Length: 267
Image (tube, rainbow, N blue to C red):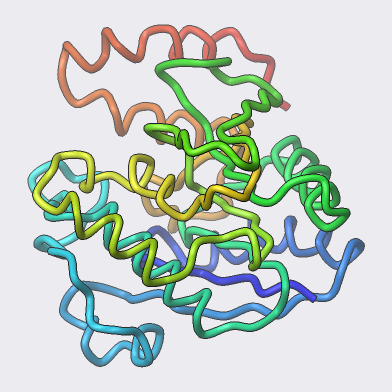
């Protein structure tokens, strides 16, 4: 049995997300039984009364201001990376099955990404390793690749990576640090720029005894609302890439990713 936990802010069009995530759950059904837990919040004003976080511990991190995700003046600031890890570790504390999948509500699955995730899930269920992090990286690594598997840590080593993708996480429950050790590690660096981003903070969940990998694949994030029907992978990917292109400098950094997008043969 697996606990699937949704954590974080509700973004995008819920009906579109649900339709897309059903593609993943249909494949997960073929592998194992699971239980879905919703620990999300709809907006900053509802956090105190949100049923999703009502049993969470007090948050030790600055949650920042109003959140309108891809709209620059309204980006949530504060210590957002620490908040994301705090949300995940609370979800771990409030569930009990031996394996856990953490999902962002604004995830967009392509068929290729589902194939990669299911393959790696089977390896973790088989005991091959402890923690898998999934996402896409448009500035380094295999831009737009089907799958690039990168070892982050070996069991018994103290070294932890500086950053890792965190769109979706699969872990053995006994392969994670405890809530206290994880949060204490993050609190110790409060005020540092590195605590603002989840991809710099999720390394703190990796204990010395665990082996972890990150996986770059064609897994995207929803960066706009879709109120006129179900979008294509091509449209979602374009909107996702363009969310990083708010200035001439940023467009220059994203040129390799945009070139990959233009050259890809979309279904």
